[in-house]
Length: 482
Image 1 (cartoon, rainbow, N blue to C red):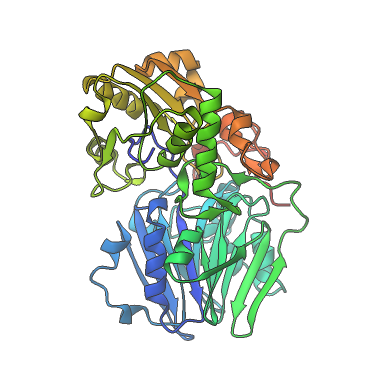
Image 2: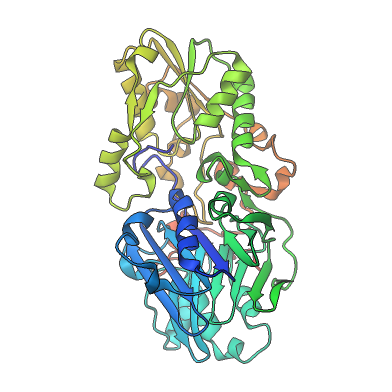
């Protein structure tokens, strides 16, 4: 669903990238962020350190725009972290652009976060009642206050103890004057990989960013693991007080978010999407003349569907590459206008033909409806819509902007009703068994947005917005970190 309107696409919270032990960190971080731009285009930032000072450049907009007129001499240092942002908590304003940089009694800290903390509001209220001042509206800032808390600052394993207080989904990069740290929540919701570059190290939300920087992939940061890199090398430890009962890796990383040239949670994104398309062809066959994808995230699934069905693949939609990824544009009107400009129908491909349209998912259905109508206006004889995941029925509390069940088209309609609403001739979704079939360890994935079986207790909350700072009521038992 690369090109859908604000109601159609899932939104995901951010991408992180960090390097340690290189001659000039900033250009490498820039390359990494450029590769992760698909994960957030609302704002971007880089913080570097030369062993004495932290240097910061942040701004609203795309990576290329934020750093276009800034010389790398402003970001000197042998280590650095960067962030691209889409807000799932905290509004679209400059104060919320990461990495966050703060000054504590023991020196400066920089923090970059991908995910959603389900207990952030409770922690924020607790520190606010004690007189703490918050500078942003993001859930990420609560980690700053935990790190600055004398209860943790004066004790061994300070970072590990602070991380252990967090609940929900997180992949963090933290930087001080001496070291770079990476951590992933005990359930492993969000990806985070480690790479080697000469004598230095690299961390990234996706392996495509490691490749862009010229780093060799080593392994993923494990769920519940804290990795520390300093002048003495790299150390690994588990920060969780006890192991999580299971992993809960976000299945939507493979369905939609990640770039197809990445390996996420140890699996090739392109290969998984092809396999989903193959299974979709088995489960939801169609009598048609051509298969066309909705670019870009539907491409591999459409290829798999074509192979599995024997129906030839063609390109009935053409993408305008000069319009950004619409679901992460912060302005609603801008997103709607951009969505209509991003895809054009190739009339000669679809005219007079029975067309199978393969997309990765449907959220609210408003743009899918426009796409079906555009194909029929172009002369398509039949439009058979095939979706490479099950219906999205439930909200997400762990970093995807699926707000409430009432806002999801499958949350309030049957498949037949959705088909009529979209104007398609037929509609078929991949089953939940089919979605998990390509994975070696299907039990390690969170598919709660399809099944409603959340990996942790989210109490009586009806949507993610109730977990945001300042919202009410407080969730009961939310989180999964012991």
